[in-house]
Length: 189
Image (cartoon, rainbow, N blue to C red; front, side, top):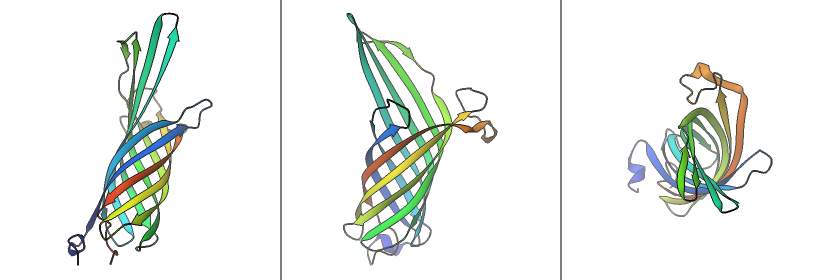
């Protein structure tokens, strides 16, 4: 019996890298990464928290002037995952829900000319993937994810409370993540 299996609840810690792309016309692919921590409530069910960061930027030249924009989106979410198997290959479905923080900067000829206020919106993201166990406590995770980011009803920068979420007005983007996980939870005999 390995160390992880000696506890009544087992943990999974993951590091991910990935890409995302908005559903808007002309959107480009952006890069990102994240970490997550999950605890297995049963051999097939895990609850946890996740933090991801997606970054984007463009450079524009107009005459002798260079403009550069950079933006960041950071989902901070709770997670729920259901694993269909506990063997070497572990397909799963899951979801994230929480706050999505964002901001951006504009630079002119290398000098910052504008920094936006940080905004927060409620978001949710269904996921599906596969974990490939490389041993009792290490694995590779591959997943697809589709983010829904809801606007705020009062058009302010911060959500404030659940009553301010505008479920009819959303931004969406999809992503693909690959990562290393440590601690595979129960059922990995």
